[in-house]
Length: 402
Image 1 (cartoon, rainbow, N blue to C red):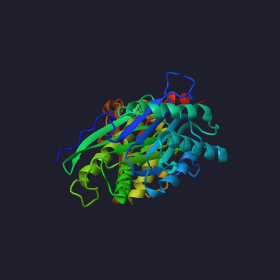
Image 2: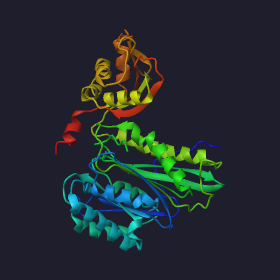
Image 3: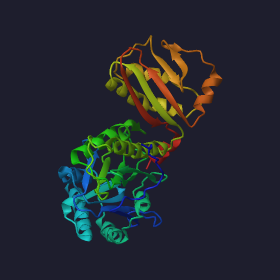
Image 4: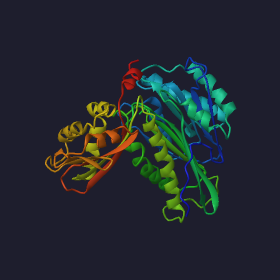
């Protein structure tokens, strides 16, 4: 079995079309602001994982209800307005977006999902959206993935795409996707939206399990600023156009499919971190020696979301003392006299004290664009975890001052 090759493209699988247009939600006519993704195959399987934030945007609530049967054929997306905290009118507007899209595509309303991203608390203006839905329906094409990826961006600096191919039952299968997200990111299923599609046939429950496994090790392992959005959503569509025997864990090609799905989703998640608002450093955090995996995870999130630590990473000093401080108050079991911290496997703290590593050695590590910090909590327990995050610079503040 050949290892999958992942590329920064979004060639849509057979049976899918997409488009991105400027509808007028954003004043700048050079910026696309609406997208659509459609499966032409009836009965397309669909899985959605959504924000755990109790304050959910109107489209999220609509999509959660519509995906109860595990099927969907289309999704319409607007950027520039999150349609969150907009009350009953926002819910009616989300339903109207779905109705208009269903009419334009000749689908049932139940088959259409709706997504919004942008400013929270501002009522949606349906006038440009009505226009945009018509434009999108007429612009759908197999090559439309990159335009759709561009149209959903908010504070992102670039679109995020990934795809791979594999063989299932000797038939070619594609897994491809695109996402957006740069700030308000700690999905925990920021504003984050992701769309992955495949022409593989997959058993419904197996698809749901596969998506959850992939998201748990990717989108649920990143944090830009610790903020879980009102709109976070991940969608995976499988239309079965490849004609393979439906995949499930007993299928000989199941592991290969799961690996491909994992890889595409993980790549998209890492692209979000690399495009974090104002970021200059990519930091991989690892914890070990914890009482449990849950405690290791809790410790990592406390470190990743400490602005005292994050601003320190933007500087030129290895702020391991700040990390030790966070570990001491984050609410997990530690042994302060046995703790250790490494930067790229170089010891900076041992047995709760400075390890004596020369400053110039550490300076070389923290000058890198990416490095790993490993924390041993000192309990001798089996718990471990990993989290991907970034530093926080002045630019993050500027972006979020509006």
